[in-house]
Amino acid sequence: MVRLLSVLLVIPLLASCTSIIEGTAEPGVSLEKPGPAGTVPAGLEQFYGQQLAWQDCAPFATTGSSRQAYASKRDVECTRLQVPLDYTKPTGDTITIGVLRHRATGQKIGSLLVNPGGPGASGMAAAAGMLADYRKTELAARFDLVGFDPRGIGASEPAVRCLTGPERDAERLDLDVDTSPQGLAQTEQENKAYAEKCAAGTKFGAAMLANLGTRDVVKDMDVLRSALGDAKLSYVGYSYGTRIGTEYAETFPQNVRALVLDGAVDPTQDQLASLVAQAAGFQKAFTEFVKWCREKGDCPLGDDANTSFRQLTTPLIQQPVTVGDRKLSYNDAITATIQALYSEQLWPLLLNGLNELKNGKGRVLLTLADAYFDRDDQGNYATITDAFNAVHCVDDQRLTDKNALLETAKQYKAAAPFLDDGNPPGAVLDSCAFWPAPVSARTGPPKADGIPPLLVISTTGDPATPYEAGVNLAKALNSRLLTFEGVQHTVFLQGEKCVDTAGVKYLIDQTLPADGTRCA
Image (cartoon, rainbow, N blue to C red; front, side, top):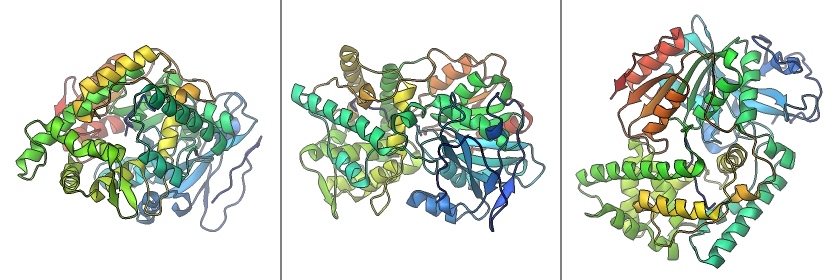
């Protein structure tokens, strides 16, 4: 998923290696070396042709949710891919990328790599989680399904680590809604301290943070393509994963076979315009939720739903609700709502949560917020939030113009009135303004000359990546747009027959759906 943006805001790592040492398999480990395949950049031969050691996935689990996902999947296997920390120094320090695979059951075309976006979400967990729907399609027979955790994320080592579990709990209670000069100064100081903690808490420090961006992720993905024995890449990218797919097509156009990009990040918008568009997207999804809510008969939102929602949530600014030994903060209530607006399947939980809040309780909303942050019952967090910030800070241009930030804050409140906390708009530098690593991403619209036509899927009621973003991406890449009429974030391989049929046919035989195809 694309995270809600905010302008406020067991195998040891092999380091300092100059060669990859291959060996014999230990019990329970299967060694494979089908690569190198396809184009191999000079100086990276040892990485592109490395031997992979496949084993049980249990040691790769880093969170309660991933432990549960891997434990219930007996037909998956995992490995670690070794890549350079810095591709300009291929004989220097190395890091590893966690990889999960479900083998094809029939005549195999190759591997199908998947990434769920974020940035910061685990591709390994996503691949394990999508297997039920995946097996219902012909893809299961024709492709190895491969999910990978991008560098710094999940099972990839080292992981980005900025805050401890208790520090993250405390951060969720620290609202930062005070837009007075003193309040803004305090928030900026906290953002600066956060950037410093990221450098201090992550192995290789600023060097790791400087090489975490999408520019480097696509290079890792190309190494993985070759090490798996595929001359060309087949890929499904969701949400921010569409940016990875776009960057790959720009960097390695000769290696593209078929890319499905679902829930596009708009290549024509800058950060601030994208933030306002996302706010409008969530307001639209909230309006649809309200319509559904009122049909249920126990909806706590009155005639003016925006006002009713604010009356339910803003009292939490002064008085959070106690939930066991924890508290539901205003920020958590908003996060829970955003989490539920990603999919109609979560609307019943949001309805229950708002009714609970009306009665002074907060268990359901706190559970939804925990799911967004991937916090387990022991207070441990996945790396998703820290990784999101770290990638964002090297992928996107610094936001330092406070006049522009203030104007965006005003536009944001106007675009999403249900999220208005009642305080005046304010302009504050986020943690990226203090980041100890430079921006490394490309600038300008994508240019991927020479690639085959790609399939872009966009949903009319997508709250996080609005429909027009997919229209713009398809146009920029001269690719085919498939429209899904619905209210959710991404849709491919989620049981929608019309969409799945078109996407599966494209991935298998590279036949695109007819121009203008719409699914409902």
